Image (cartoon, rainbow, N blue to C red; front, side, top):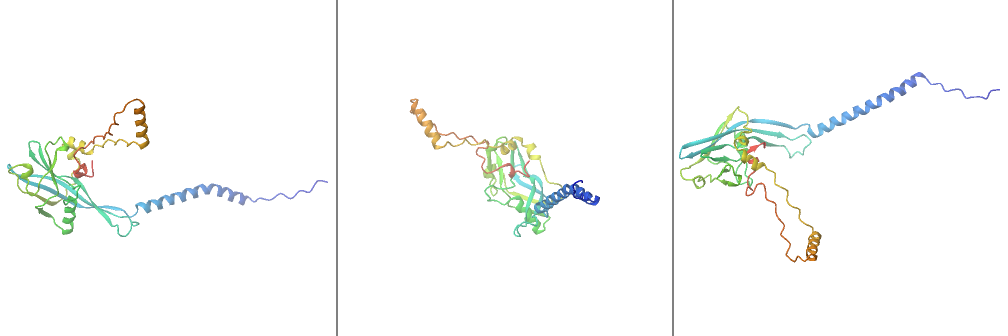
Length: 265
């Protein structure tokens, strides 16, 4: 008599199909979940941000010289970036500009530049004038005051920079140089970009150079060890003073290339 065996479990074909479907669909579900998470992260950090162009202005610098009235112009775009919706309510966005510093060619390798910004914050910036023009709805304006003006004794040497007295230019430029003024007018032209770097390559190279790294200061135990080693060798002379590395931009603390061009090229 054969032993009793429990009846074999009957597996319906539908159950097999459902298990197979679950095995196949799970990777697809994981992919969809990951895609949704990525989309949510993108909207969280970038959603709502917007960079809007508010118009262009032609800015002209004028200087009375012994040769007559000389001018130099540059075009600026005023922009405004709106803060994303997730920023605090107090943060509403920021203004910005694109363009380059207008300059006047005085002849003989002499130039006067009207900088975009003053690192000491003592003068109004071009951006402040452009914002003021937009708020006032002005199409054409003339100003007797200007942002900071500079000149170079040698345009090939960035360290020869000097600030021009805007009230009495003759103090800096010499006899015969009179009032300085600035005009702003609406234009459809695009912002001036890249011309200064091509016109004044030595100036561009000097003001964009990366300063060399400063030497690391020695730890006290390193100094003491060096002192003992010198004493053991019979050298009683004092330790040499630490050498400071020379800056790639000596004597140019006030300006950077960002004062000549925005965005920086």
